[in-house]
Length: 123
Image 1 (cartoon, one colour):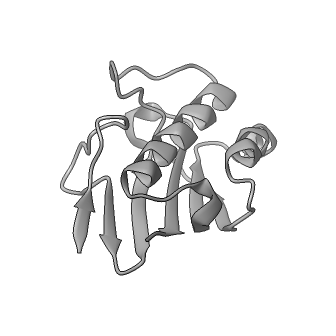
Image 2 (spheres, one colour):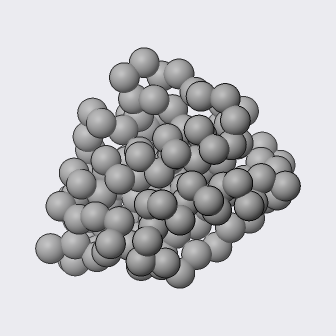
Image 3 (tube, helix red, strand yellow):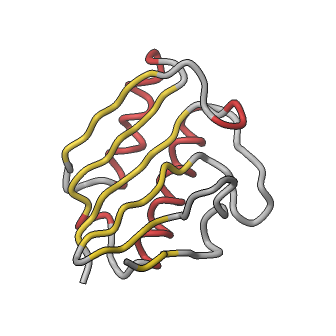
């Protein structure tokens, strides 16, 4: 197994890694919409979904893969009413339409509105 880490996504804020690569798969930990350069969080579901997806993308790139090779995502929303707005942004990144679960949860770290995790093939 190999730990995947990049400065282009927020560092892990707990006892976990940004991602783990094993065999030809990479498992990306849930990414909240924290900007890696300054730790800030944008307002609104669209901006937060965009940043969460960008964070996932940076980790995928560090692992030597891309959104096109994602096979499964799990998405967490603080409010299911944000489902449609979240989907609009998500669809711009995950164009290959991987398998997905999307659930509403009571709360997310730092009070954010969404979190995205991914599993992808890699070389």
